[in-house]
Length: 57
Image (tube, rainbow, N blue to C red; front, side, top):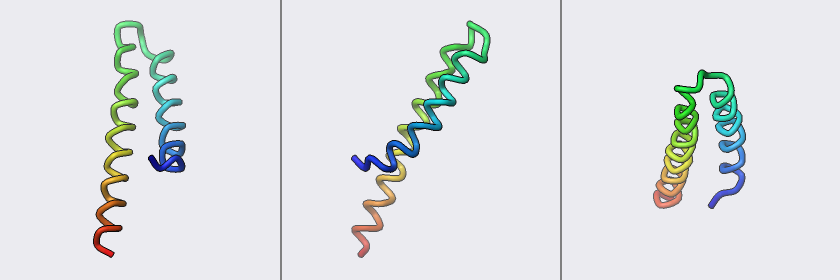
């Protein structure tokens, strides 16, 4: 796990999730999980790109 990428991505997605949790009406609060899912998708895309670059070299 690349901790630097993890932290750089986790902080904004965490704040976004918390903002959605408190800013939207109660019936839309489950939408606050969408940034969490997007975080993991972006994180693993970045890791896979990095592995591809290392394999090409």
